[in-house]
Length: 91
Image (cartoon, rainbow, N blue to C red):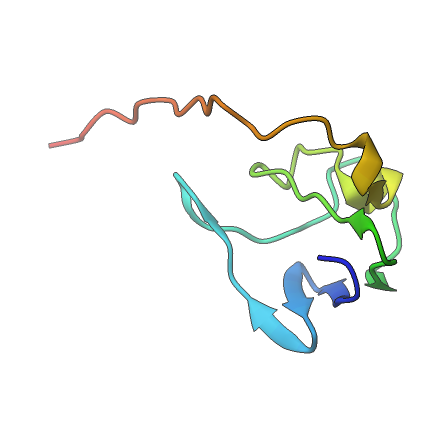
């Protein structure tokens, strides 16, 4: 959120110096650099009126780690649909 200090180091997310664990349908997420790409560790204060977006598949997401923060005026709507692939139960 605007004004927060965000860090991603060693694949772990920190907001205001507290480690934050996000989860998706596969469990806890880490934030590695996708294969074949070189980006620096993320360490920034999110500017006023901007937001930092992280994909829910961080190994394959090109998100704010690559293109930076997004100005609030560029956010047009709230998500209204979320696709969740069914994971079959294994016996």
